[in-house]
Amino acid sequence: STSSSLLASSSTSSPLLFSNAAKEYVTISYQGNYDFSLATLTGNTVKSWTNLYGNVRLQLSNFPSGIYLYTLQTQDGKRLTGTLVINK
Image (tube, rainbow, N blue to C red; front, side, top):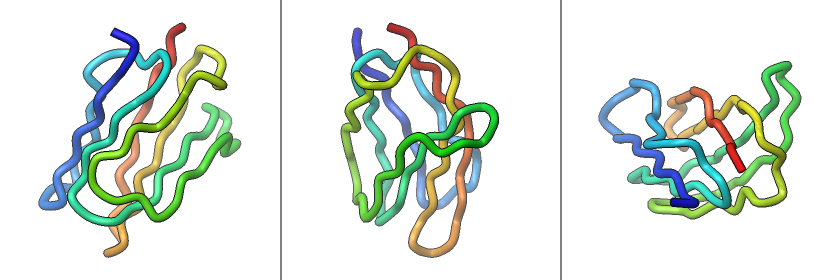
């Protein structure tokens, strides 16, 4: 599969989970409005998406393989973080 799924519940603050390494895109499932960003392990933000809602598929084909840190920031102030592996 060339996709990965990210599931988050608006009723929990636990880390988001990826089902496997992403290749071309990642699907985020979150009930509500949110912003999503990817950063390198050294903390440099490489891409941010704003004003997302619900299930969103983000294109990752322009990103090199590696480990990235993600942040999902909700409209009500929750901040969920974790790692995303891109493996092409």
